[in-house]
Image (cartoon, rainbow, N blue to C red):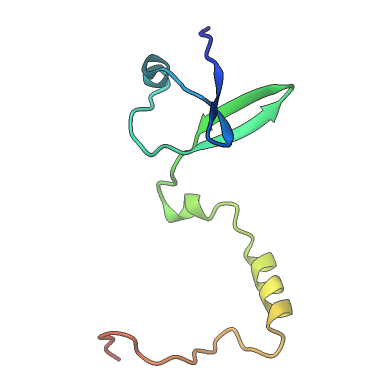
Length: 92
């Protein structure tokens, strides 16, 4: 285990992670996003994984709730309504 210090960085506090720790975790490129979780007084950083497919991207998407909410917000509007014209070089 390695010790790092919490320091002031502008109006925030920050921890600098040594390159050797990042290399061990397989993190080399910037920017890298992390999910932050607090569990039992511990701060846990997990590298955010980018979805590799559309199926993975939408795995937690609740389409029934989405359309239910949409219908509540737009009670008199059809889902199929398209009020705009062509915006580019569309061919019909």
